[in-house]
Image (cartoon, rainbow, N blue to C red; front, side, top):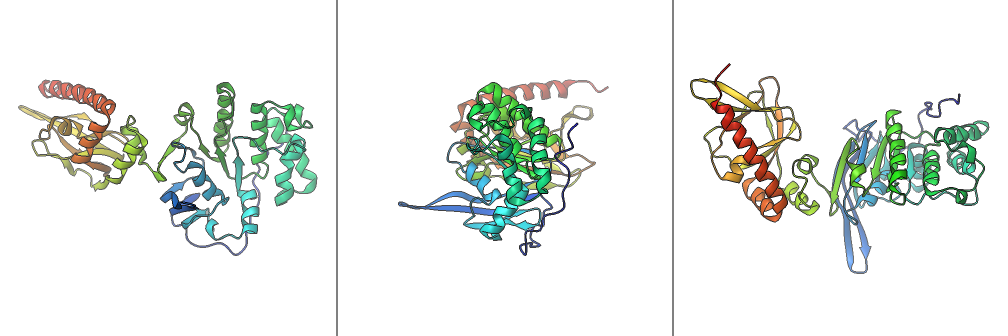
Amino acid sequence: MPSNPFRRKKAVDVGPVQEPGNPTGALIHMDTIVKTFKTSAGEFPVLKGISSNFYPGEFIGIIGKSGSGKSTLINMITGIDRPTSGEIYVEDVAVHTLSENQLAVWRGRKMGIVFQFFQLLPTLTLVENIMLPMDFCKTFPLRQRKKRALELLEMFEMSEHAYKLPTALSGGQQQRVAIARALANDPPIVLADEPTGNLDSKTAQVIFKTFEDLVDRGKTVIMVTHDSSLARRVQRTMLLADGEIVNSFLARALPMLTPSQMLKATHHLTPIHFEPGAVIMQEGAFSDKFYIVTAGRAEVALKRPGAADVVVFRPGPGEYFGEIELMHGTESIATVRATAEAPVDVIALDRQTFSELMDESPETKDAMGQIVDARTAENVASRGRRPG
């Protein structure tokens, strides 16, 4: 039985670059990252004020159209490229302040990077390819490096090919070796830029399962992908559009909108906090907002003649309310409040923006209309039920 290739090592000292600037406690903290490239036509902004956190043990999928900034975002995290402005912290290391030499050593020890086209050195055997990061960073004693490389190849069922050159392998086999190489120095973070983009669907599933296994072992995996079927299986997705992050709760609530439409809506969202029991919408009052719950839980209550209110729906994170009033142009048909036990946080979209989005996306409008009809019928039935 091979020893555990994920054994914990001593903390890495990257020199006098530690700054007490990561107040979030996140593994990765990005604060207002801007990246602008200079072209013959002038400056071209690729990332426009990205702020986000990534936490230990997460499996995050970064999605978006070509040119949305996905690969540039990955390059900011790894230090392969530098932000024009903004700050990036990985643990307590201010990545944006590191020199090139410091970056190279830090990246080799903290980041495992997997590319779409493998980038294995063609003149080295598989075991030599995996030993190379250990030789560069000197994370393991010289006598242990080959043993560890063989253990990693065995973990990926590639040990029988250890002394072959990369060209003797299929694309899927090369990608498994590339992942093994990314893990050579036991980094806490694995970043993969379209790792399945050059593979058939069956092999892509095998590679994706490998990343899931890494998360189960405690790694944080950040994967750029165009594959929507894979994106749906990660723990969390980050949708980029035109160099900005689309609100994930809105993307979940209105998935038929285009990325550009989602970004438009994101710009108009207002976060609101309600204390326990606070009324969000009052039955019979005018309502002009579409609400999506981001934390906590609300309750939708209907009045019944001669009986106590009946709670017909308890929306939690990612669920929404207020669409009936906006679609029908009516006063609120129910009272919506935070539960008595805990506060609730929501994001609210104004009536005008909501209406514009419905007009711009007939598919969303049709789907929302069906939901409105079903909820209206359920509310009418609930109001007419006898108590008990």
